[in-house]
Image (tube, rainbow, N blue to C red; front, side):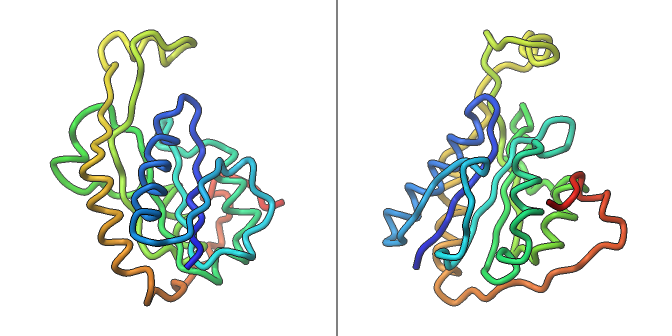
Length: 181
């Protein structure tokens, strides 16, 4: 089974999660391609897709939103899972966090089978405002590789029998945060 793991990551934290997901799936025998969403043009060779985005003010970056909207037809043909990263604390280890409203709408549009939120990472020497201001009190690496691998274990068990989800088309397209192209 050929699986695409794709993401958008400004500072590398979400990419790190995507690479852990890809590595863990590969170790379970899946044929995995791991690439940033901005680098992908075609999805027709994949049997399943995992899409991740870093949360900035509860929103995914534009390139991953564009990816989902551009490929909505193809994503509806395969099983899809979403993951987000971002909380700069241990809240994701204490319980499941729901998808942000924007990510939930995107997930519904493609019929995603599920969504999970993992902790984020913010380096203390990050440049740019507001990240540098946030880093003064919130810097650290809140990603939990064991929790990520546990999610992948569940996912790997479900993948061989997974079917595409049931999409929901929203009348208010602006809820997805991006126009279709």
